[in-house]
Every structure is written in structure tokens, then in C-alpha cells.
Length: 185
Image 1 (cartoon, helix red, strand yellow):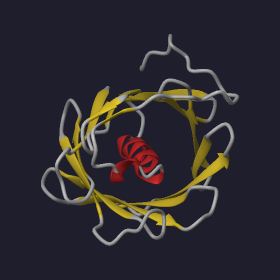
Image 2: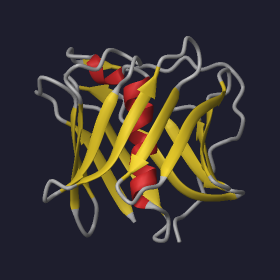
Image 3: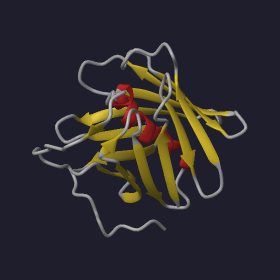
Image 4: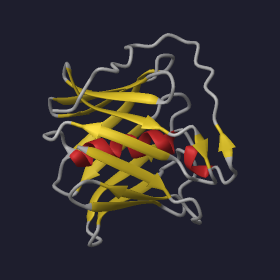
């Protein structure tokens, strides 16, 4: 399944339009959020129903968020390895791992199996971050969307209002290399 998350270029606060083959979604960061101190974002269905809330917690070095889904599930998102940019998202024996790779590429694993990959755009107009996601058809769409939205907001990438071209100077080690041959099931 292919998904696009497009941050709205001209908006007072961070807003996102999300397109999937079967539906459209919308996400919006709360007006009173201050960097990573109690960030709040809501993911909504096209009809306005809240599907998930993302709550951030203050941390000097490690990103910490909770995903509170409308069906009652709660996931804890944490930075596991700062230098290699590895993140975990866990709940009652269910575990996801997100790896940041070079060239604005990311991969998401559930257990030992890759279930999604996404790429971030390099050229940004205003707040126009864009994520192209490929994921397995049986992967949990809401959890995947929360992971991608959290990466964007936790890096304070959603506060930029200038046009920019981003260059990567990542010289550190990667926990896992990006698998260019991976294809969604």
C-alpha cells in the first residue's frame, strides 16, 4: 500500500493531509504545543473522528511519545539509540522498531520483519515536508502514520516557515542499512 503524508505549506500550525488508496486522513498539531514539551497531535478520519492522539514528553536527549489510539490501545515510542537513530514503539508484547538511514530514508520493522519504508523530501517550500510511505497491506496503518508524524514533529521539522533545500551530512554509523530491494506484501 502506498501512502503520502503532505504537510500543508501555508498553515498557522502544523497540519497534514494523508492520502491512502482507500481513504483520506488529516493530522493537526495542537496550537499550544511547545517543541517537545507536551506536544499534542491528533490524527483524524475524513469524517472528523479522532483515530489517535500523539502525546510528547519532555526529554533532553531521547524522544518520548505515547500514541493513544481510539480503540483503547496505547503505544510507547522511545529513542533507543541516539547516535544511530533507532526508535522503539511498544505495547504489551507488540513491538515496532524504526530505523533512520542515510538520504532521508527510514524503515519500520515489526519483530524481525520489515513492514514499511518511507522517504522524506529534500526540498521544502515553507512547511512542505512530504513523506512517501510503502507498507505491507496487513500492517497497522494508524500505528505507521503515528510513527511517521512523530518523526516529523519530534525533529522540530514542522516549525520551519522558510523555503529550504536540506543537505545531509550523516557520517555516523547506521544500525541497519536501508534495504533497497524490499517490497511490500
